[in-house]
Length: 384
Image (cartoon, rainbow, N blue to C red; front, side, top):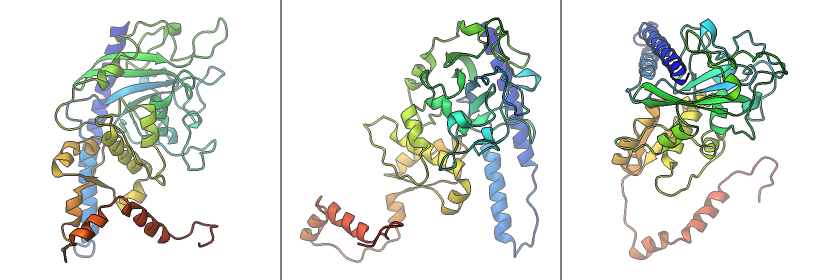
């Protein structure tokens, strides 16, 4: 059964690649609107750059990873049926897996329920996901405008349970599936069941949790009531991926982000973070994935303000340069500290005593006081 399911997932992967190629062709055929070559020069140039970035973002990878790395099967509602969203349940069917193309799949609020104070939905509160199935990847992939996506972006709210759900809090997820790969080809999968489908004694299994027979498109892989021989033992793929030997440039870690790392990645824009840890613990990778997430969640705001990554030297920046583009982000500026100040003219030199004083740890207290004195009072706070 495992090999048959894997064949179905490979068929679905081919379908996704075909859809991505169609999206890229559509972008390539998009014409930049004309205008006055003088008065509209800046606008035309901006639109051309945006078009090129769009085309680059739809590239079919570098052959080192498949189009999707995971699948989430959400449990049905308590009545055993799919959510009333007009879309298919987790059975996949002839239209492929259920992946809502509405707000639940795009990361924005939906028409029912209420987001939290920050405007973001909690994982168990994203409307319209019950009984549905989502494949998670590095970019959104759909077959035609308005269609349910074949693959949803890892940064959407609906993908959050992949990183945070567990048996104590399944966050509405029945099954979490991870995929193993060799380059861009799927080689294995493992399933982790976080909750059980709701059914009455003697009832047939709800759609999506049947006898395990894959549909023609590879969409429906039922759990046979929980009895499954997975291609890989539970936990094996995650451990294998984390322990994979690293060589060459840094790569993204979207398939292996841990819960505590995801909390940092998805923290609100207003939160200033300092990530500390021993060498090799993923500090830089988490920081880069946070930048990618913030660009996804606050694109318009950050498009105006810009995002800057500062590294210690050019060699380090070269090492991390491929991470954000692999996640579809091409607008982030990378710079060394020296590059930022290279146009500053040195007007003098400190004496030895002055240089020693400036390097003293006590200067941190002085600078903190000076900075604090320059901050405006918080709302409701009386000036000191």
